[in-house]
Length: 219
Image (cartoon, rainbow, N blue to C red; front, side, top):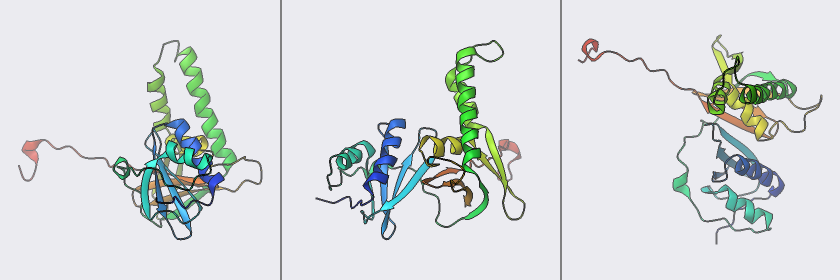
């Protein structure tokens, strides 16, 4: 029997409970980081979320988040059946840099404003016209909530997908005037929000140029 090795059970349980509430079938990936274990999950709107907890877990294993939550709730120490093939997404590269900091209160305001807009449009439509909730949700998630400036002047766009991720996962914590700031980070093609209780990452979509076949240099 392989042990999960998680010592920060309350922290891991909070992460898993939020993750399974958003996606009951979600896998969770455990990676040993040397004295701590990084838990990774993917939200339904294509954002990766992670939180480090105390422990010496398996070097790299994927299990069902719901099954691991059940084991932790029962005080068990075994790792559920491995489902490594269920993890199909790349992870952001290590390192990266902080390009700006923003208060948790501001991020909470942005998250609530988007949620309020979704409720309003879903119930009353847009300019008197009925609009599908999914279409409104997708448009709100793709909205650029913040633009930071990286060294060299490159703009870094932070979409509502990231803002909603750290809000819905509880990464901002209880809030209040003394709450730590959240860092906007970049690592390769990834943009992240590093909040007090976890990090959300989104990979930027590369824009491809489509050329007519006749004008292509190789024909």
